[in-house]
Amino acid sequence: MRAQAAFRFVERCKQENDIPALIEEFQARIADFGFTASVCGAWSGVGKGRMYRFYFNNWPADWLAIYERGKFFADDPLVAHARSHMTLFLWTEVQAHIRLTPQAIKIRDLTAAYGWREIIGVPIHGPAGYQGLVSLASLSDVHLSSTDRALIHLLALTIHDRCHSSPDFGWQGSATPNLTARELECVQWAAAGKTDWEIGQLMNITAATAHFHIEKVKKKLGIRSRVQAIVLMTLRGLI
Image (tube, rainbow, N blue to C red):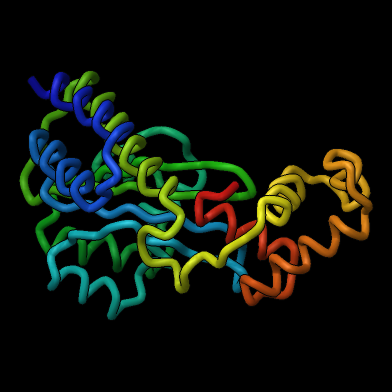
């Protein structure tokens, strides 16, 4: 039953444009496995240049207040583990093998004190340094077979990809500006590591014209560097 429901959800994500409705269905599907809270987001860039995009979050309001008040995201050991791993993991299975900072230990202890019994992380890795995470949590013990884990992984990747492919969905600071086809193509080639000259050759335009288009994109986005433009466009699902 759970497998059939998961596969139906995957098919529906290919056809449905109502993203909030799909998120609601995703949350219903993970509830079948015992998970009652979930969050999905992404980031790209490093240090102060890191940018974020959040798709959905239905953590309990009191836990979210604790998390935000403590500014836990930067030190969250679950997030840190997701940055360097590719596949689904259970917090109860990996926490003993992670070297924790004092702040991460505080987060771990508060998480346990709140009552979370299991947390799943599904890391996402994409182009131009794009990273994301789908996290599920349960206040009860859960017992997952290998098939269960595969189905949860499939559900998480599917809802992330559907949210990400909708450029203006979720919180990302500002709406995506209107870009011309040429502007978008130039930035996409820049994200692939091409120089202005190489972009010009690929698009049958001059290097100066390629540079002009990328500068226009930067101006429309309100940012100063080409790297920032690539990061922002990647987060918004345009690269």
